[in-house]
View 1: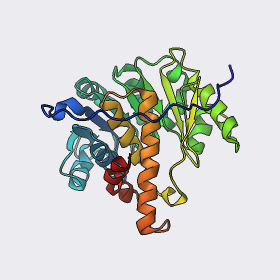
View 2: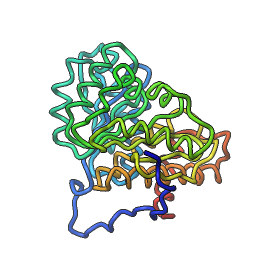
View 3: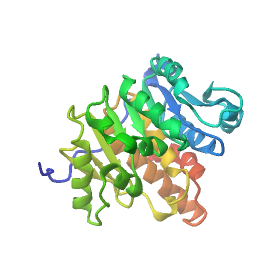
Amino acid sequence: MPLADVSDEPLPSLAPRCAESHKGDYGRVLIVGGSRGMAGAPALAGMAALRSGAGLVTVAVPRSIQSTVAGFEPSFMTLPFGTADAHSLRGEDVDDLLQAADQMTAIALGPGLGSEPFTTGLVHDLYCRIEQPMIIDADGLNALTQDIRQIDSPVAPRILTPHPGEFQRLSGEKCAAETAKRAEQAAALCRQDTSRRTIVVLKGHRTIVTDGERFAVNATGNPGMATGGTGDCLTGIITALVGQSLSSWDAARLGVHVHGLAGDLATDDLGQTSLIASDVVDYLPQAFLDL
């Protein structure tokens, strides 16, 4: 089934906040990730989620890195799993993670999760059993490649956010250079989900967002964002927007736009060479104001 022309829908917007609202009205976000040596990834996702309007953010990590992750940002909560010397989240953590996820509005899975063999089963269990919308990135995507059939019929909306290398591992084909062809490739991955609840965000220059039937091409962002951690920021942004009741399609489109815009604003002040991922987080407030 060929895609329709590129979507001309305007970007969605977040509703004005009611004077009587409280933090629970703006989403309870859970970031699941982290491993020894990769504490920054879930922390960046959590920080970006906060700056993108999430009311409550919890970062679930191995106990061995909890204090490090907590030290990045006092405004999110941390939830430790495993023993004090565990380097990664493990299969035995699944039941407790499912219980934590049950209290949440949106879940992100993958930032800094690591590539230990036992993380594959953890990812598959959470992907197939969590009944809230989920954004999957990084090591979460790499785990899915071990059994790509997992994406065929998720129990709830899923947003996959691969860069070209991850996309090739997921789909078995190299990303095309032409935008229209890349959109078709991403749409084909969406269509593996027979329930039509999967969105693919194919990252790169002119990021593609598609639901398998329509696609959008993002126009913000710059080469300075080609640095470690910016993808984790995008994961946090989209998760926060889903947590604030945007649809997967709208959250993905708005998320990639704001993410790139924050990077553009940071580059205007700092230049492309010196840009780092935390700069994207720092410029999110201005990006949202510019909307």
